[in-house]
Image: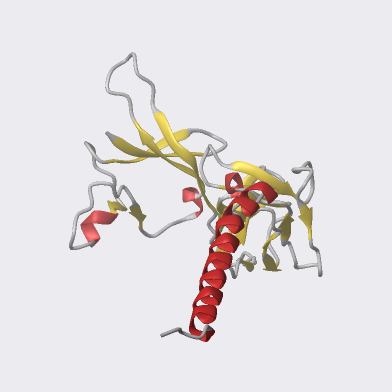
Length: 244
């Protein structure tokens, strides 16, 4: 029930259908692997030309007329460079695979953008797809608590202060094209793991009240007096001369 469609400024075209049809130059990824994965709907496009440029959507197509096609994700933008066209070189480096912090700490998410590329801003998102959350925009509105580091022109790192367990997730540093306002290139992502602070349980101090302490000491003192008195009587009895 899955197909691929390509959207361009002119029209929408069906690229591959996993149920029916013949599509020259396009094959499914499972045909090139030994093990078939039921969840893998990737495709290969061979001998690409500039006509293949556009945004590709993986779509769950309608079974009946009452249903509507459902796009899975926001699409993959494909740009095809000609032999004589300049090749934009762009690298988005997110060196942190995993960032571990404790609640209340400040999380540093590193991102370095090197090279050229189409004009457009750098943005941060948490998650992927249509449900991803916008975190920071270096050319627009952002979360009020998130700040940019900008140690250099290529530094697009951000700081998340006073993090909580709700801030956990995978954060992506993304380059956008200004003209089409579409995603151009994304970093590999940095997973933020937030641990709750360990709370030590303080045992309440046991305070002895004077009355309770006196009730404990009284029999002890009396007992000591009785032992002492008995010892004295025995000593006197021993020292006393005997009459025959």
